[in-house]
Amino acid sequence: MKYITHISRILVGVLFIISGFIKLNDPLGFSYKLQEYFGSDVLNMEFMIPYALLLSVFVVVFEVVLGVFLLIGYKPKFTVYSLLAMIVFFTFLTFYSAYFDKVKDCGCFGDALKLTPWESFTKDVILLVLILILVAGLRHIKPLFTKLPTTVIALLSFIVSLWFGYHVLMHLPAIDFRAYAIGKNLPKQMEIPENAAKPVLEYTWTFNVNGEEKEFVTNGSYPAVEGEYVGVETKTIDEGYVPPIQDFSIESEDENLTTYFMEKDKLVMVAMYNITTAESDGVAKLKTFTDQAIKKGYTVIGLTSSGETEKQNVKQDYNLNFDFYLCDEKVVKTIVRANPGIVVLEKGTVVNKAHWNDIEDIEL
Image (tube, rainbow, N blue to C red):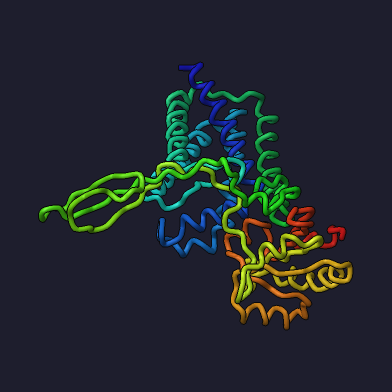
């Protein structure tokens, strides 16, 4: 039991640190995922949505710290039972999400590793078993060092984690795992190769045959059945190839301008997913930067999911010299973790991006 406990201790500690650090690298992204869980389609806890970011930072810092605590043997009983409480909660959450097919990606490893809901649930079940081993073998978990260095390491892990989380919130994630990272060509990220795997669908057809409803399963073809058609249900067996970018578009009221803007040699996109909730200090800094960009030959556009009234109001209130175009809110949130944020492109390739706090650091 002693050796099994030590193996479980290492596996759980390392996994919690890695998982926590990846989310700590992008706590804003994890808060968006929590908002999905709190939404009416999953937990129906909309009252928690305003607290998603605060909860996000607490959870990911606690996750990293517990992993460190476990490895160094700091307060074993508190650490192990805290891990147990956390994994029980997330096992329930991932099962609920998977069973009812509500959230497609759990966000367990941020954008670094996408897991389906059932994969996430399986991962949590394995972790639950490992943590139950730790509960049973609690007496074998001893501190690696004497009391003072163990306490110092534990305190430092908390301080460093908290500082890192605050730092990336005030700037941008230290490591960008998303398809809109610097160096990525957005049109290529949207392409589907000719030899890409096609989606596999299963169709369940319902017919009324001689007064009795019967189901017929096919891969898409209409079944040769003599009876009255009732309905059909479609199930995705295999999604096939899914491009890294699926829903990105730049639209005016009349047309889709995505290709037009992606062909620009020098383009600045001001990402503001919701104009009414944008940081006023950040919006105020846009005027000087965008005017300079226009003088240097850049095309400047805004991306937002807000309506026409909000677009015109922000232009007038801050005397902005560029137009806003429609883009899906979730997509704008994914492009840059700031509201507002800046993205600089050359023929569709991201060459720079920044949080509004760092606008002055962008060289045009």
